[in-house]
Image (cartoon, rainbow, N blue to C red; front, side, top):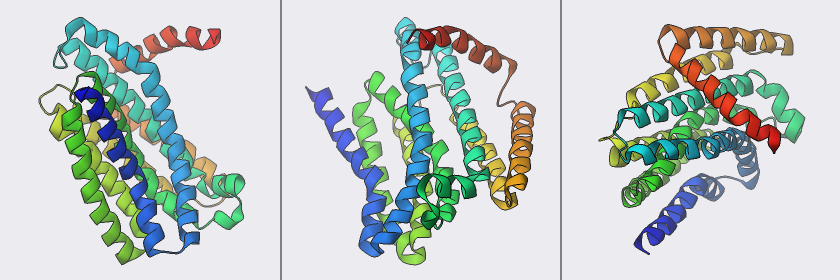
Length: 275
């Protein structure tokens, strides 16, 4: 019963965390501004759903490894956990590059030209997605290893700070401040989850943040060099080449990770075909 109550509390806190930005923005700005922000949030949510789908597919696999050892510090489990997050962060990096390269085409195509003011906000908010990716995996793991109470504390602290950050940045910079607040709050949420839940475990958190930094730097380059549609195509493929090269150069993706991805594809593709 206590575990169930803790899960309810944490879901309530996280629901508040994920909506506080629009609430404060609506309180301080006009409804049309909230609409532009909501469009950018919807696009970022596409990446969020992508990560959630990967998590839902992979966590039974991780749970199988955890059940063998019952120890999150056990070498084999930590290795699987690290590789799954690395591969997911790489996919998120590719998603960011694609969205940013064609943002001027995608937003008017999907939502209409009247929502073009959302594009600068999207160019900011998309950088919160890697941190939300870490949060998704750490949150699910915290429930699996029965550290819900610690996760609740982390969520409450992150939410309280998020309220202050959103309010101050929105007052200072308007809707762009809210977009920056989204990135900062997402970073703090993932950081608190690590500090309260997994700092005594084996996940390579420094490596994760190194990978996120690399992904964000390449994505930031895409923001500055996009223009016409043909130029965007060139920038997109150039960024993919640079991103892949840097991943291999700095050792974020190794031969073992590629083999691991191939094993996952061989394991799960037949399941998708059956369904």
